[in-house]
Amino acid sequence: MAEVKNGLDGKTDSLYANGLHIAKDRYVLTKVEDDNKMLYARKGKDGLVIGKTVQAIIVARYVDPMIAGNTAETVQKLVDYLVKVGY
Image (cartoon, rainbow, N blue to C red; front, top):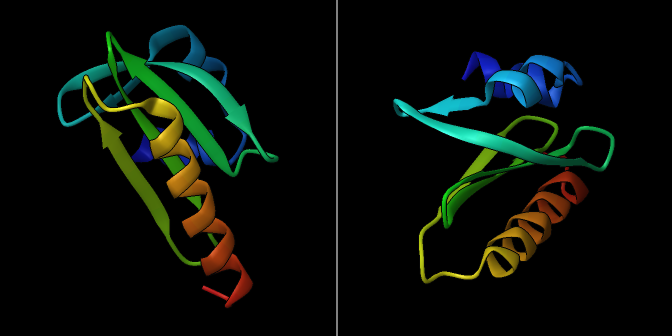
């Protein structure tokens, strides 16, 4: 989780170079959006979408044949809602 926190704090250089390690798996960081509020990473056809709110970090994993865009949209909506209500 230290790597996730660093990425969400804007320290992404090492994540782009070395990847993001979650549950002993290495994911390639592919994109950072919304002023470091959202991280996107892939491992083959699977991947992660990570979002940050005021008080929480949301980690969603998708696996083939799930659609990455659906996961990203769901996480973004959840992040937006939680930020709106102050969480």
